[in-house]
Image 1 (cartoon, rainbow, N blue to C red):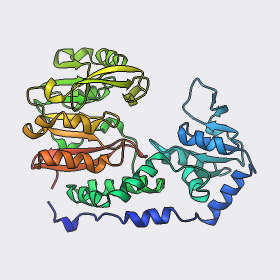
Image 2: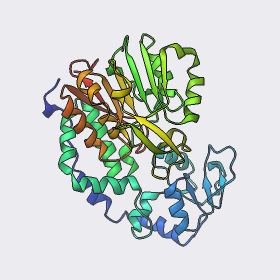
Image 3: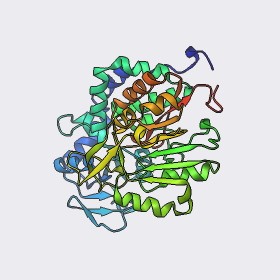
Image 4: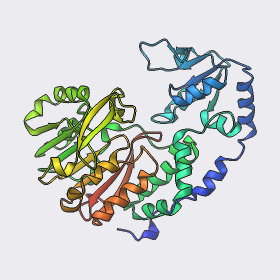
Length: 381
């Protein structure tokens, strides 16, 4: 492995924040002024809380969505395709989570349109619109614990991990999607990187199994596996997982439980599809247990995406982390503090891990931190 000095250095995040808080260029200011006075038809791209907040403040003529097949209106405005936007209109890109740059590129192919991003309006009119939650959370968290981010950055094993960390954190701190150039949406690769090796005879634990999509991808990539445990507390999701994975049912144990730091009951919002999560306003009550209690034999590979509940579940997997030297693939994107709290906890139990980071969208979501037993990272220096 190269000396630490040969790896990328951490960006000056404070400088990035200061730059992002400055007034935008005159060209952006003029476009924002035109939108405020509704000088031409105005459309938003994206259906999310940011778009809703914007529509509460500004006159909007419609919502651009090239993928909606049934609905014709959203938040009181008509839904149209991008090719139906009238010439001379302004389009405000509110996409931030999955494909903000792809959305921007679709609009920029129309040279007869004026393009702005939600963050452009935030910079030009900071009192008009709230910062996106992911930006506000990142700035507050970094202000409280700057040293924690330097520490986790220094623990990242390879150059790619450090580059990913820099770019993702820069986007989270500024909302400027230019930092995400080069990323693409590659969800099928999520959790399954070449550096994990062949994973022969492995026992895979899918924590947050949703409809079985990740387990199915694992089985197809690693046919020499031994067994799968799939944890999913949503009854509807579990039914879909059982149906999807019918062909491999003899090697899969379906566990209809949530995972936490102790057994009990929790409120669960089961109506959010893949984003179903523990919630104080949940629509149903679920049973939860700990990974240590439910699996007493060795695990080889533990994947967790629990919509922000990962750290709690990791506390319930302490024995496996300490004793198994299992590969861990943990989602860290739900809250900024997870970028340091999760590695700090895992490494306090087992310091023998290499730490790697990969990202799977163009936006703020789907960042995974990998913990691979030191010396077992395939293809790494």
